[in-house]
Length: 247
Ligand code: NDP
Ligand code: 8X3
Image (cartoon, rainbow, N blue to C red):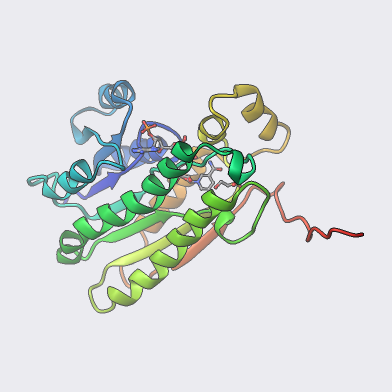
């Protein structure tokens, strides 16, 4: 039977690569995002098994609407909570409140609202949820406070949700990537392509396709197996030490 995946943030990066991967694998794919033109392009590419829906994750009504789709699109087996972004790494008092609010509303409120709305359907279908957290949710770095805070939330939300879902057969995974070259840094820097290029230069970052392959692996594991969390980095990335101020 054809399975259905709902991917938030399918207009770029991990989400777009996942839409291609799952459509190529014979799934029905619902892809959301704010950029209508990108969604149209993806529909032209993927054809009738792709349903583009222009949804801003901050729009409560639009998010609730995703749980009211009629069959077969409404028969969602896998929710890929991928839409997300980061504010600039500027000191907190210098960071625009609007950017901060956009990040919290998208990464946390939108994700929780959509998950809550879709849970009855996912329980009915013994479905699966994959949430995009980040290494930033575990390892602190300068300028990361708000973004990292949202991703720590996503990780813990995922783990706790498993307790609520005990006995339902629904699987939940927190995916925690390090550096991957997508539009993530372009968005974070307010469109600074040079800054994005510099960050990912000469270090073989992970790719969107690496993540699509990971999501596919998670989706095709035997149903008795739950990967609680998975942390991944490019080989070139590891950790820095503590920072100490000396007098
Ligand atoms: P991209 O910037 O390439 O893609 C982000 C996607 O999220 C876009 O499709 C964008 O669509 C969507 N999005 C952002 N805000 C909203 C919103 N308010 N409403 C609806 N859609 C929204 O980044 P990535 O693919 O890299 O990021 C995907 C996820 O992975 C994010 O949650 C990110 O935090 C996480 N992640 C990324 C890492 C990286 O290094 N790239 C590492 C760890 C985690 P549109 O603008 O059209 O609305
Ligand atoms: C993004 C990973 O390390 O660029 O979530 O903050 S990092």
